[in-house]
Amino acid sequence: MALELIVSGPDFEEIAAGFSTEEREMLVLIAREDFGGQPQQNGTLYTSTEFAAVLDLASGELSAHSGFLNFLMPDPHRFGNFVKYGIYHVRARKSAAVPEEIKLKNHYLNKYLLTAIIEDGLTDPRLEQIRLQLQAQAQQQADQLASITPEPYYSEAFRSEIRFNVEDETVSPEFVKRCEEHLKNMPERMAGVIMEGAKKYCLFFMELCKEAAGNQYDPNEFPPVTPETPAAEFAKYFGVTSMQIEAPENARIPAYRLSGHADWEPEHGLEIIIRGDRVLYLGSFDCNSPWSDYDPDDEWNFVNGIRQDEL
Image (cartoon, rainbow, N blue to C red; front, side, top):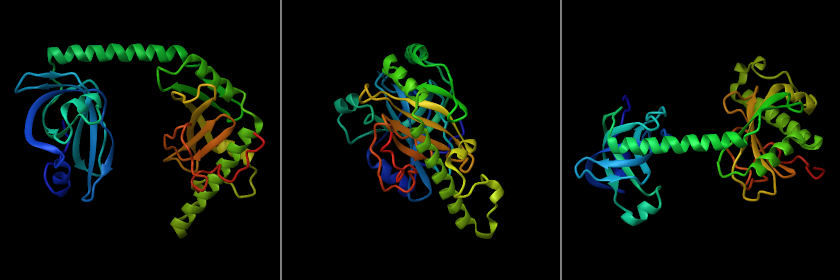
């Protein structure tokens, strides 16, 4: 496994202060791949992967309480270092600042600091049993989600096929149906707000790139639009391809995230947040929630300033 760990230096010493100095060897069953990360001051990245169980090799004690395996690595970096349901032989330090009973109640506090990866691709009878249970649960959840997920829908308003993604098996079929019908029967004015927001996003981003590039700016890299281009014509320059439905705070109100691509911003794409009769957000994809509050002065939210009284 070619993961470069950083186990010395000021960044490591600062992080290690919250962990025991004792290092232990153990087998860990990974629950999902590593993700995200927090850049540190000296060109390093502090990140983590979630585990489902730990087998202490010195004592033979098995803990089936989930938690996190934290580690420091170089930045720039790559993720996906750990394989989901993989078993790894590692050396790590246990978190020292939180009492054991609290760690077991809150898996975010049950964490280890990784100092070495000794071997990967392993097997162990007790961990294999847990792995089989996790895989069976995951398949059951996937089957349940599939049973309530609508078939893809072609939207005339957005001129694209939209696929549905139900993010939580606790979401009721009734709420999924409410969101699906809301999209399919979207008022013309709401679709118009989205087109106006897309126009603002496109023109704003093009101007930003023009200022940054100066003489190197190439208009051929962007849609052939101007401030005079009608908002309705911007539908050809972006695509809404997915709806994400998460567990609702109020199941009576349809609320969801639409996502897709934007020709003017291929790196970060497009995200649209809708709750009830309001378009709450339109901008680059940031995995926002339809149940969050949004700053009315955020210049990167391109529905700000667009009247929605008529919706």
